[in-house]
Image (cartoon, rainbow over all chains, first blue to last red; front, side, top):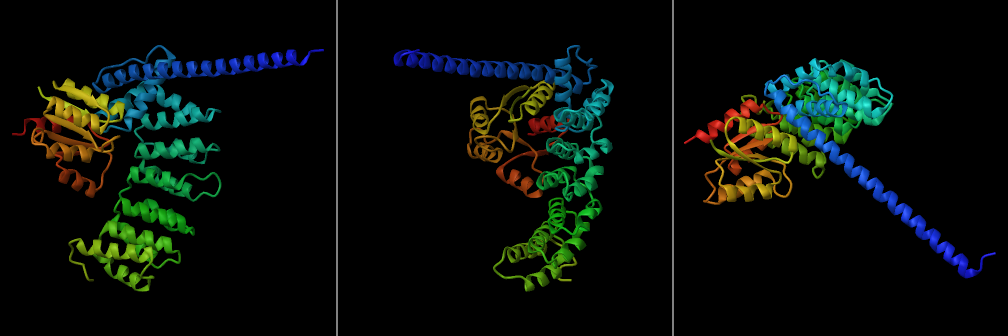
Length: 293
Length: 122
């Protein structure tokens, strides 16, 4: 049987040993993480050099090492969304010729969520957002990260055809997507008319109609004016406020009567009234023959 | 051949812009935040600054104003390259003293052409 001093010594040694092991493990994890990050950024730097050569019109073969091939595909996919014109076309063409469009489609049905998300990014990069069809179902993916990646990639690729699907996904009760991210994605995709927002305007949910109002305002969609003026009389005060702000951004003098009528009915100290007054000032500042009806 | 400073916090965009400008024959320096960009303008006296708007430490508008307010560098050409796209952003850029405004995503060919035009403007 151990005496007290022996037990204390044993406890001290065991604690010191455990602490040393934990510290070693922490140091090991940090070393591995740092090495991985360094290797990743080295691969990215090399990949970006190849991306530059692709945009210069050089025929760049697919790298033989998997790590560099993956890094190049990822770098090209990310760069595609930052440029336009000949550079975007060159990168998209390279991704297709190198077979990344096909592998993107395979990745999109992978079991791991991170792979599916990467597949989305690659696919939209290879198609320059022109054929978002296969990505649209990913807005209903079971994993929220994949849904978020689909929203982000659809917006970044400027896929206008996907706008109705994004609008519908905002209103989904099951597997929802972030309303603010989807709004920004739609703004990025910049539909030229409010027709693609029809599902949102028809929604019973004022939150969804508010989003349609916001998008119409951000993009200054003049053909959304009738819907926005109708929304000035909605029961939901926040919808009315957002509609007023959007009409102010669109700035059509034709909205003046709808705005003045709404202001007459609004609580003068409310943010709704503030938005209406701002919108009235904005539409009056816009030159036009229709001002004043 | 002109001296150009690219102030851009997105390393990939900075690399791309610098590469295209170098290919066009210019000497290019890259800075990744507003303060460093402004310091480089005073130190190098470039012919042109390609300036992002949203930068750490000091934004592009502040850098542009600072350039215009100092007689030593006030004549430096400034091309704003930004994701901001609204009319009021354009107005703010020009009122801060920018000579040219380009929206992201951008065409590198267009950027080089605009840069050349600015550099050769009397």
